[in-house]
Length: 620
Image (cartoon, rainbow, N blue to C red; front, side, top):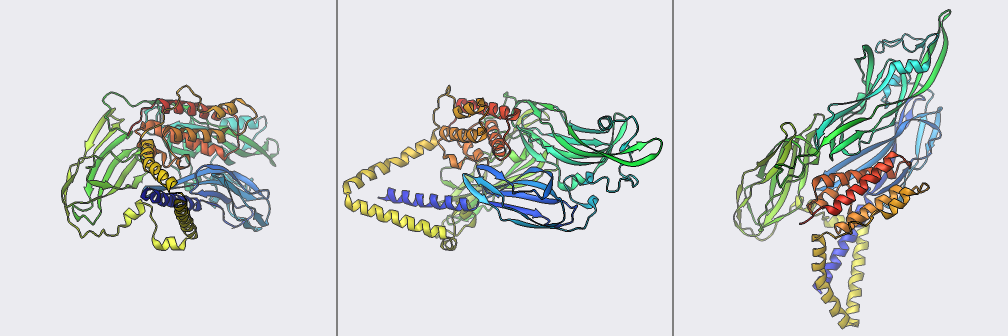
């Protein structure tokens, strides 16, 4: 009977948790500004908050506007008490075709199979004009360069290459005066060691420019190094003996997730370049030629070296850089009624964003709760520097003297190409006998994701869930009276179920190594008319992971995957590769489908990762 009621309560909380999480998913469309001048730029942003398994995002109709740039992807992730929330946005830079009042209709999104619609937006465009040089446009320093084509060239440009003289062609002028170049800080590095990749536009011409293809850096953990204001700043550099105005188009530090030769993708710019046609006999005759020009960077290959196996520590989890570690207790004298807190801080520079909590040899008398992670890093340095702190709450039932054992942390230093293991000191402390009434602890409450009674009473969903629970209990009592024998049999089964479920969690499922676990994906890949490739791949890959590690496939997302697979001792490098693959697939799900090299690359990577999971030795 007790087992049955335990299951009912668990079911109740699962229902409530699912409803609560689902309610947090939002789809919002915003426009900034909503009142603008006729030549002013408007940013339209479509944002999904706390939504996993995004099927697609459709922008509203934009027939009254010119799309200057977009769609551009933005992703933000925040973590509080070990609970991650994520928002994904598509943004467009727009310019109205004419003055007037316009309505931007509803946008739609499909998240986990459920449709969402945004509210319409009202945009007012006046007949006034603003100075484009002061706008915060995505490529503001290159917009509207010929507002008055016959004015003196601006001081910052200094070049007269926009004049097209007799016998010169537009193609020649562009070839000589505009280049999009990719520069990297190094061409060889270790897994987890950062490189700086910068896409630069070298130009002696003025142009209206938009980024058509933005590199996604597949195979890397990416930290963007530019903010919006940097797009309006240019420098001057010499290239092949000639001076150019130089604009940073994209700058990011990249942390490779796997070994091998990894290609950095091409970036592509669309440029509207204007020239003044010059007549040697009559001077400038006010004949303007405008040409649409596409510029692409060259590919660059980064040779990523695997981390050496020789002398690799057993507790190494992928930290690359130079670090120190410290551990301390929030207080060293407290009662059995109170919660202790171990605070571990890792300080240094390296792949800080990928660091995970070190393994701790907790004594069996400690009851340990989910940790809280605090990032205090500076992403403008290369590599990232700062600190990462893990706060781990724990309780002890009996009074006495105790100690937290030394905590070991291992990392690989790419500068001297060696592994190093550092340790904290053992921490001794004393527990006094309490009153037996535990004090309220807000941090534990957050860790266990419990809600206050007031929040529960204010929620209509919880009322529904309570009624549902009561109905289940009443049904059970009715069935018990009707058939006592059936009840006894069910109780026997229920006593066995917890043991079975625990075994299921502690063991991974043995899958057939030679079986094609992407059977439907492979069929779609081979069929030229199939356009559901990424949808099928996303489904089959998640089903494989859930089956392999006995997980609920609805709980699998890029934020929780690391913690889940870490419990099975899956190799850290494989975990990172799997996370990156899921991110790439999710992005492709809500972008226009194309049968291209990217599709082949993702398919090949998926096959490799599944094979790696099948041959991975896991344990708890």
